[in-house]
Length: 341
Image 1 (cartoon, rainbow, N blue to C red):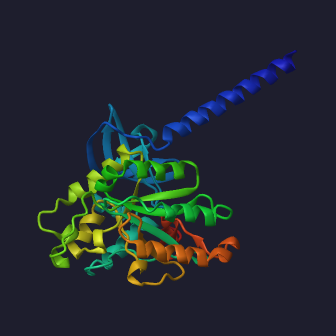
Image 2 (image 1 turned 120 degrees about the horizontal axis):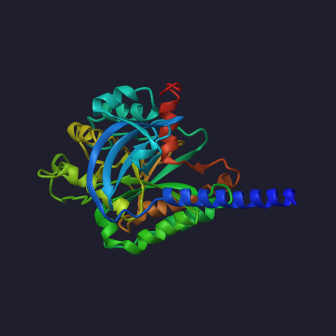
Image 3 (image 1 turned 120 degrees about the vertical axis):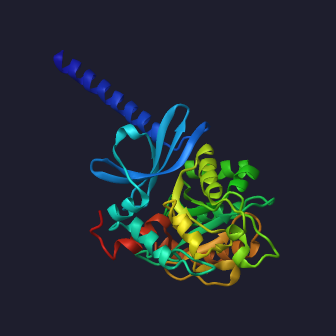
């Protein structure tokens, strides 16, 4: 009798544990933060043994406080409540010293060293262990629908060898406003574990002029409010249930040195590309490939589909894969000093 009681107790305890794990996972799934206030840049160190995190944002939502945190070793981000951590507020300069030996800080430093370029400043390529690429697809403002074929073809080619297949999408605030159904479709693909999306900040408005020179165009246009372009995009991501990453892509890949430093001051890593397919640039092993999936660049989409289908046999043999942008960048900067904080 006692044995049966113990068995029942253990079974019920096991069920309770499973329920609690499920509730914990649901609580930490990416929520829609619909009542965001006091959203601001905030730096500090947060630790929950054994992992150190860097705090880059603080905000309130429906009466609760939250941090946007970065794992400086893996470049993973997450939203969490302060109460789970031991926290030490810091200045930006203090965090850069504190985390100086991490892949995250080294990636930012490299982006700053390449900041003089008017086009394509930032990290242009990763360093995967095997042959393959990191795909980045830009979602600039557009009246045309999402090029869904990019994502359905990725799933079809990779479903047996790499599921979910990683992609990075550079998203603008205006695109989110204009394409709620396309956004929900992408989110469903991720929820169904068909693709895994790293969401890159691509500015809110993505202004562009056909007449202005590059040095006065895109985010370099006089009067541009960089705080708004960066932070409003992050807020729009959170309201739509997207998790902001540590990456930023300049509209048109256009920037100057001052703008690069403005972006790194937000704790973000500028991401360029060494293979903008529509411009005839060929991908190489480790390339960060750029296409536009917003309906405005059919040539780039066609070139990517051709590339994908030309690799069918290599994909089946796991000899050509898509790489998570976070892991690809992380590996490049991890190798130079594997003993970071």
